[in-house]
Image 1 (spheres, rainbow, N blue to C red):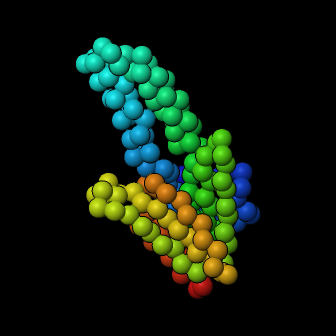
Image 2: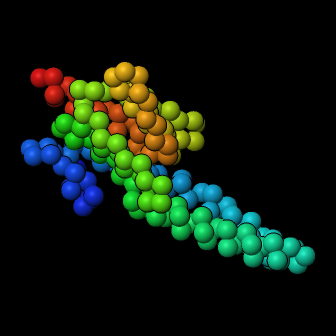
Length: 155
C-alpha cells in the first residue's frame, strides 16, 4: 500500500486503504525559476534595468513561495473506495469521489509531459461532472491505479 500524509489520513473511511498517491510535478516550479534567471540576467548584464530586476526578483520570490506552499499541500490519492484530490493552500480545492461515481479518468499531456512524466488528470463523474488537476506527477500511473481500484471494487 502507498504512504499517505496526515491530511489524507484524517479523511480515511473505516476499512479504506490507500492504493496509490502522487503529488504535483516539479515542473510547477519552472515559472519562478525562469523569473529568477530573467532577474539575474537583467541585473548582471543591463545596468539600466537593475531597478526592474529588483521587481522581477521580488516577484520570483513571491511566486516561488506560493508555488512551494501549493506543492507541499497538494496530494492526489486512489483508495479502495475513493479518489481524493487536494490542491493548494491559499485557494484550496479538494474533492473526494466514490469509485462507483467515476465514469472515466482522462490523462492529457504534451511531448514534454510525456518525457518528464507529468500531465493533467481529468476525472469524469456520473452526470458528466469534470474535475481537472494539472501538472500531476505520474498521471498514467494514477489512471491505472483508478482502473485497478474500479476492478477490485466490482469483484
